[in-house]
Image 1 (cartoon, rainbow, N blue to C red):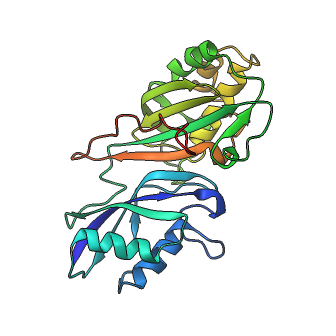
Image 2: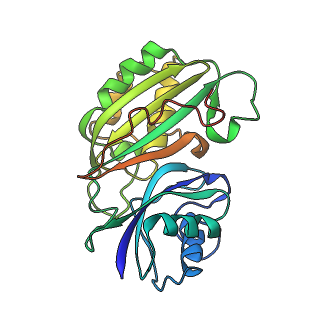
Length: 261
């Protein structure tokens, strides 16, 4: 019996989120079904985080214990042969018996992609939030700088555990313009429920001139007035989970999701 660490990618369009539910198709449920087909006897896999319905991932990390007589490459092939087409095991490796993808994580990186266009684009719509008018890049950058550091993000989301701290530390907040796309990279030690989507909604409103960049500060200080807007789930992707022995990809958010355009 050994513990395996797997990096998963999935298209969240037709999932009701990551976490297993009583009803609804989830990433966890289809992955556990695939594991059972290769003689996994566990009851629940471990995961780095729980993405919402419609949110994508290229760097979700899971772990499970399995009595497997072959190498990691063979396990990866077996998993992918049993997973549905919208989920893939990108990497499989042996982990220590004590490894936990959530509690051992140092940071998580999310990317949110905007498509700035007045007209829909059928090849991109399920992976971006199409916005118009185009947000002003300088306003986006000016507002985003206030997010970096440790703050109480109570206005932007709620903790997964009722009553626990809403303080989080943002290590990186950066926009990448590649017209007609603009992509936000956010790296933090952890995130609240809906936190990234509330941040993006407010930043887009600021970029479109509805609020001043300093409005961000209003929501980071008492009485923490809640952010009302929520960006669509389809634009959000979990791209990387950092551990003590891992290195982040150099350009994790640099390539739009279709055709690498």
